[in-house]
Image (cartoon, rainbow, N blue to C red; front, side, top):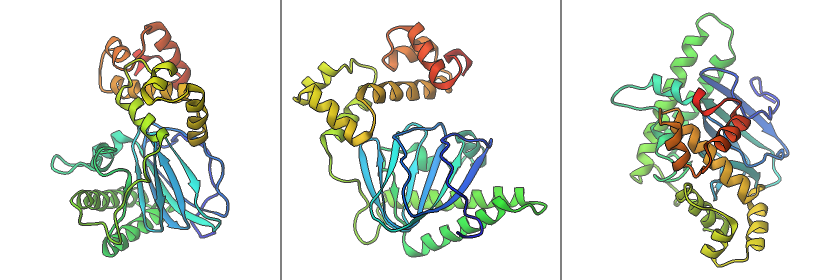
Length: 286
């Protein structure tokens, strides 16, 4: 392994108050379940092939591809080949990223536009990719350095990386950054359509009988198919998505009662219990 590469850390929560940097190389993909976290993630594939599942969409990543993951999306990777794969992963807290932007240029734009504007996968032209990778190398060097002033360099390099990433994101929306074919998710499956339906109707009745009737399928077959594609049950997915959305609204100042209604929780006391179990604090403490 290279100088800055670290052993894989399976935790899915941040320790730092701003950002964290990881550089991994593995010969075998570890079993990572469908999950979500309350920070943004940049996933840059250096080598190998990976299929990434994000909210019912699947992306086959090639070296040089970037995957952008917001704080409201559930996702998991799956190795697409037998070769060793190497990737750089950056985690960043949304509030820290917003603090680095300017009134005219939001560094969080590439995450806050997901998933409706162009999807999660970003493929850059060769020149932009080279500049972006050089920025990542500088950020990595400063991240692990103990030299005086390294914290200042880290913030500067991180800001540079995010400026380049958002420029590339804007260009991709206009169709200028994609080469060698379109960047898109795999064709829709019934599970993908079901996930989109759940996300679009998260405040409504999402019981199994209702979903089975909506998709004209046996609820038992639907359950097995959903579990096979995602690794979680429909009930687990619906509950997690409702809690993720509730956390999002609460942190933006929405009253608890309104959050309950919008997110499909009919009993405020049950909502408070589930929220505390998931996040370790009550909705009123957000």
